[in-house]
Amino acid sequence: AEVWASRAGSCEETVRVRWCIAGSDEGGGTAVEGEHYVKSAGEFLFPPHSSISTQPAVIPLISSEFWEPIREFTVVLEEVVCGPAGIGKLRSTVVTIVERDLF
Image (cartoon, rainbow, N blue to C red; front, side, top):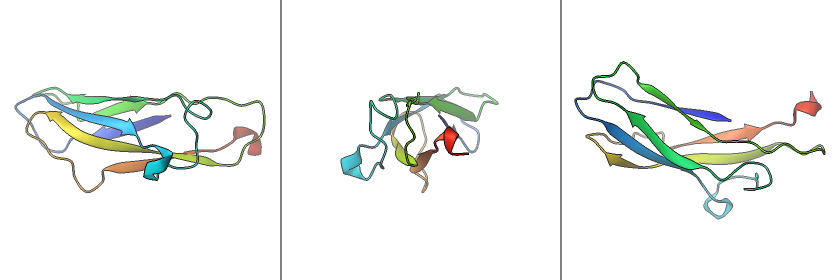
């Protein structure tokens, strides 16, 4: 699965924003780490003076031999690690895993 983050506006400095997958105890969803997706976390890196304003986070999904219902997990922007930036109102997004054999 890929989740994309965008930076709005220009920036004179490098900006790094940490992301992670919320645990099920934090309302992270019905997908189970290690069963439906690989535990993942990382940073979005936005270089200074760059036209690159969108960065991907890649979360490997784990395939199953058996049919499963739709599962979900939540990717969260944790904090700005460096640079003059803030996290806006949209701090998280839900990733939905749909069984491809269903369709």
